[in-house]
Image 1 (cartoon, rainbow, N blue to C red):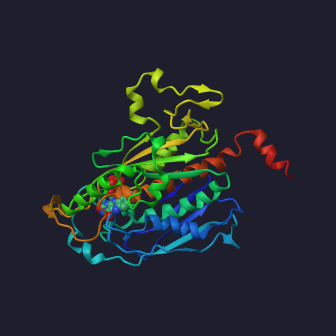
Image 2 (cartoon, rainbow, N blue to C red; image 1 turned 120 degrees about the vertical axis):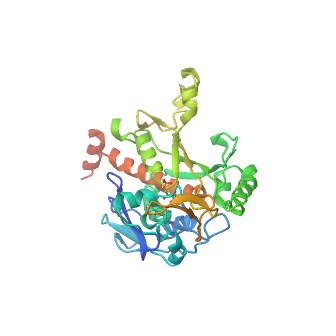
Image 3 (tube, rainbow, N blue to C red; image 1 turned 90 degrees about the vertical axis):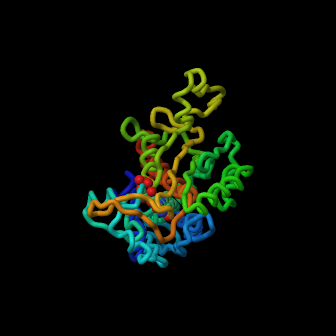
Length: 363
Ligand SMILES: Cc1cc2nc3c(=O)[nH]c(=O)nc-3n(C[C@H](O)[C@H](O)[C@H](O)COP(=O)(O)O)c2cc1C
């Protein structure tokens, strides 16, 4: 699917080496202040070619707003955003046009669709994730009205893991860090790990922590559309993500109930193993997720693979690639969580008669 969301929906379009990428966002209420500068700053965080820790492909990723905004406010009409591709080097992909890059989507896309857009991976490229960041920034404009904030950063690179508790993560530092590192003491070690992989013509995986501040109790739908399942769906849908945890995640399965239960006193939860979600509904605590990115598939070591004729061949890549996709992936994680929370906010507006009466009594 190229469309995401229930009440607040966005559809992304475009390919890595096509003319443009972008999205159409539908379901934003009218009257939300549209902050174009903020939108561009969010795209700048994800844009490629910024430093040695991302792909050298240089794109300005300048967003053009085509519709849905008038005199600085949303109009409730679809918001169309386009970002033109400026720096595609399709020639770099000609020598691999008939072969499948190990761990990339080349093999499965070819078998499913029978068409091979070898230029940068076409639609399967994470170039598409710029559209998600744009849509997520628009969702953040709605969340801002409710003082809800979504933040992310890197807590692990390869086998190096921060020992800090999530409450100790430094988000101010992460915002300034070239690799969005949440643990100031580990930033240099993380950077060296990425550069070591890059120098060895290899790549490395990473872990991203995301939190939602000020999400009030009641967000999320029951059973099949639980907030935790929606978050997992949103985060797993990002390219290269192989696992998602909510709250204590896997560790909860290794605990006793007496260790994992979040006790309540004086109207607060004394811990947050649940990650702020109970029964699929937010409980007013911080919503906490961890997203695990695999190492970048495209590496510059020669690797065994097959071509579309079924022959065994060597894959020797040219082109430009991220040495650690989790770094820029952390910006995409923020965007996807923003979209889920904004969607939940809109859906929750009709969960009680009391809410509906409040709206209609205004008239
Ligand atoms: C922000 C971001 C940047 C990425 N950059 C690259 C890249 O430069 N080269 C590459 O081979 N894969 C890159 N990927 C990962 C691939 O898009 C992804 O692994 C591929 O589409 C296969 O999908 P899967 O790993 O989800 O199965 C990136 C992913 C993200 C989130």
